[in-house]
Image (tube, rainbow, N blue to C red; front, side, top):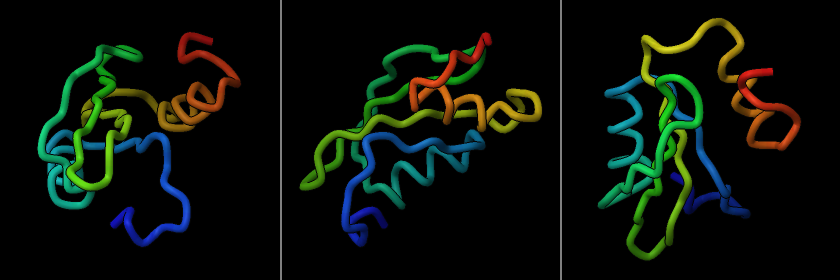
Length: 86
């Protein structure tokens, strides 16, 4: 999936518990993930290990976590524009 992009992203945000796991394993071809820690309530930061593609930061947002606007808040957080608590 990502190998078709001209530039590789530094981070991917995924929504849905099972969806996030399948996306990491199948779509992003991760063979292992280290859980770095929480970014916000219920939102975890993983470090994906991908053979031949290197490491990738991965934010996992379970399906039952967050209010409207959480994903937009996370994108703003990643861009350094605000914190989730703002």
